[in-house]
Length: 218
Ligand code: AP5
Image 1: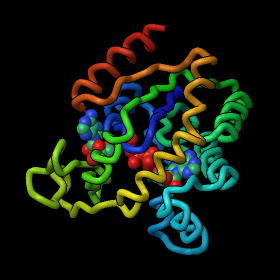
Image 2 (image 1 turned 180 degrees about the vertical axis):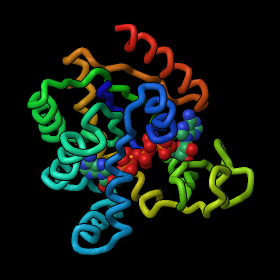
Image 3 (image 1 turned 90 degrees about the vertical axis):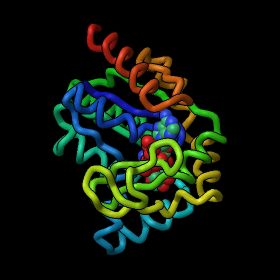
Image 4 (image 1 turned 120 degrees about the vertical axis):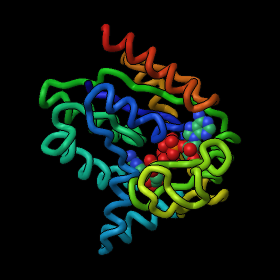
């Protein structure tokens, strides 16, 4: 299976990703997570990436495509994938299509999560992420059992640098101007699966699950 998670920041893509990747037995590949790992290592590329991400701007297509193509053709995505946060622009979608067609592959489904902008602001300003295993919590909607501590691995929870309100609003503006056109692009290709994501996480998971059933039955 070659799957994509599409939707605004904070739509719940990362929250739903593990169940989907486990069920389809494909790796969860998040470009945001990949870039945050590179930033931890330091150096020139890390500085460049951080400067875009801290402002809520997109990393340039050329740089993104170089990193992702390698992962999809020779790395962990070569037998199938669940992409999260990629593609985000038309050139990225074209680049992905070309890279896949070279090896006779195609996109099987694009789960598009929709939520209103104000829900995004509320979700992201309350998000806390584990420094150890990367799992996300929310101070109000998915609180950890102990304040500031991950339920799964016991490491510290932190707030992402780009989860400040002004940056969240810029990420939303960037989504509407540069990414939302991909919804129509994948609808025309007949692979779009629309998910109403403005409801409790378990209800979103149930909807995703039933749409996956249909997709797997073909
Ligand atoms: P990235 O890391 O991809 O961030 P994003 O797309 O902005 O998405 P998020 O991870 O913020 O949100 P999510 O939908 O996964 O929501 P989550 O499940 O965490 O990108 C960061 C940056 O990297 C970009 O701004 C850009 O600079 C760069 N970048 C990355 N990819 C790029 C690319 N392809 N091209 C160029 N630049 C790129 O949930 C959010 C919160 O809500 C959590 O607290 C969660 O607990 C809570 N929550 C989840 N579901 C629910 C629910 N149903 N009800 C209530 N709360 C919920």
